[in-house]
Length: 253
Image (cartoon, rainbow, N blue to C red; front, side, top):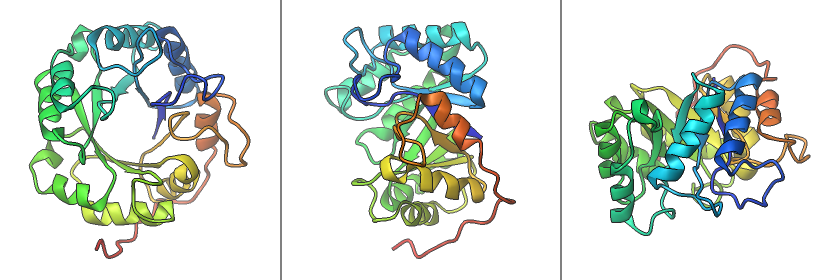
């Protein structure tokens, strides 16, 4: 299954079809679902186009998506750098409405960030699913040492050049997965930037859910600029590999 990540933290001018306003995000969600995405991940923006964890932009974005794609599951971000600090992030997330009241269905929580467990707890209190973002073997080890692996909706193995150790995205993903071990929750594997396509194809062959969209990459496998999120999803779905294989388990140290 493919999740579409529609905008991320990119500058509004990063791509001519990067959706920023609630209306544009809603249209992009409709397009990627029509192209075959099973859910969407978005970073709500305020009226100035800045990422926001505030209730107003969040609810406006959810409403815009649901008006065009009523049944799609919606994930949002809680990443560091949007709120001023850990305390403000927790306060903002704690004010979110639950899914039945206009809030998101689930939200990603990067486990290496300070206060991740508190943010995850605030989401669960609201009935919002938690997607655990695991960027490194160290974060995976910290995650599995808690009871959260049995409480999350999904584990996101995210390998990002400059943040995840290694010069090769597939090698980096293998190390994170080795530290994670057998997960009781579904696992989605994705890379960003130069690692986006190689990791996606490897993850598909290995039987994992995957993610693609303008948050992760602006280009097609050929290097040509993607037309929009829907083209990226369509390309991802062109994969015709064989049966899923077991991912290798390298030494996580």
